[in-house]
Image 1: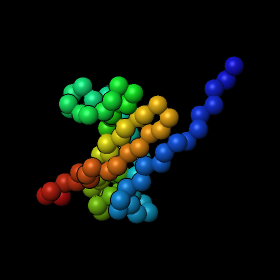
Image 2: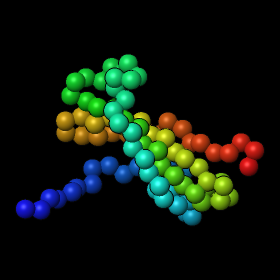
Image 3: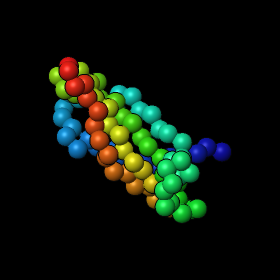
Length: 88
């Protein structure tokens, strides 16, 4: 028997623009709950998603970091920050 996947969330950069290539690379951490001392309940799991955008900032690239919470029936994420080169 096959499985069916359903999109439940779409991550979007707060300052995204055409050509940024947002989503070119994606990393998802393991649960952050026990490491961060978070108030997440036993039925929730917190994790981070890092999304690459190599076309951002004139081709120098950027990485966007999102904090996410997975509950029993939903997932929610919010953008924490965007990392770019300082001296680029």
